[in-house]
Image 1: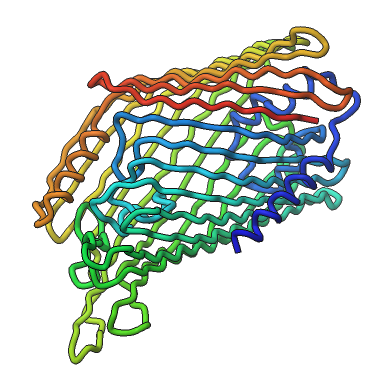
Image 2: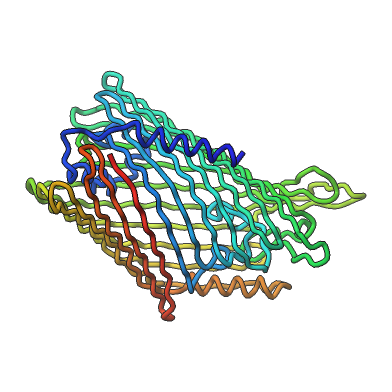
Length: 507
C-alpha cells in the first residue's frame, strides 16, 4: 500500500503543482501578498465551510516546496519524544474562475522522532489516554501521505462546495518492542452559502471523518520481553489485556456541522460549529483471533469565532477577533470474565474524563502601501485543562495564560525581489497546577506521570521566527527560500529549539 502511495504522491505533486498559473496582471509583490493575505489568516475559521473557498482569493496560484526540519527538546513529554529530523515535499494549488474554484494539495513527510517512551502509537492527539505503552525508549520512524481537494460552484446566488482530505501514516520502531502502525484518515465535507439581507450571507457546512489505526507489536527476542501496558488514562492500565496482546485496533468515527454568517465583503464574520465522535479500541488475546472492545471514548468539541474589521483609510485597518472552544472526552472501560477460556463481557464503567476550555482575544493592526505590508497582532489566551480518573480519584488540573504578539512584514525590494519576516513572541504563565496520582505497582509509570506533570506545570517564554526571500526567475514563476527558528526557554533555564529550511517555487 505505502509503496504505491509514493508513486501516487509524486504524480499528484507534479500535476497539482504545474496545472495552475498565476495571473499575468500581478506583480511579484502582489502575488506573494495575495498568497499570504493577513485577513485570510486572521479569519481561518471562516474557511471551515468549503463554500467560502470560492472567495479565498481573486487570483489563482500554486506552490511546490521542499523542507527539512530539526528539533531538539530538553524539556518534553515522554510519549512525544525529545526531538525529530523531518523531510517534507509538498505542493498546493488554488484555481479561481468567475463562478467556481478548485483547490488541492499533496504531501509526503518522512520523520524520525527520537527517544519516544511510554508510547507505541502515532496520532497521540487522538488516542493518547488509551495508547499501548512500555518503558523502553526508542526512535519512532514515520511516513505520512496527505491528499486534499475541493470544488466550489456558484449557481445563481447559491454556492455549493465539496472537499475531501485523506491521510495515511506508517509508523514503526526498529528495536524491541517493535510496533508497526498503519493509519487511514478520511474526511469528507460539504458546504453552502446564500446571500441574505442585501449585504450579508449565511452558510452551513457538515462533514464526516473515519479514522483507523492498526497496531502490531513484535519482539526479536522471545526471552526478554518488556511489559506492554494497555493504558486507560492517567497511568491506569487494563490488567487483563496488558502483556496478553500485542495487537490493537483504534477506530474513530466523527461527524461535524456548523454555521457561518457575515458580510459579503468579509469585514464581519461569525463561525460556530460542533464535532462529535466515538473512538473505540479493540484488542486481541492468545485465546483466539477474535478482538474485544476494551476502551471507548466519546468526545465532543464546540467552537465559536467572531471577527470585525474596521478600515480607517486606504492604508490603515484595525480588526478584533474573539474565539472560544471547549473539548470533552469521556472514557469508558469494558471488563471481561474469563471462564473456560471464553471471554464474556462483565460490565462497562466510565472511569476517565478530560476537558479543556480556551478563550482567545486578538487585535489586528495593519498598515499597507503599494509595496509593503505591516501587520501586528497582540493576543491573549486563557486555557483550562482538567484530567480525572474516577476509580482511584487521580487527577491533574492546569490553568494557563498566554500573552503574545505576532508580526507580519512584507516588503518589495524591487520588481524582482520580495522579503517577508514573520515573528511570534509569547509567554505561558501557569496560574494553577494541582494533582493527585494514585501509586501504581510500576515505578516507571509513577515516574512518567510525575515527569510529564512537571513539564505541563512549567512556565516558559517563546519566540518563533521565519524569514522568506522571493526572487522572480520567470514572468510567471518565482523561487523562494525560508529560514525559520523556534526557541522556547523554560523557567528552569532549559531550552527547546527547532530549525526549518525550506526552498520552493511559486507561480
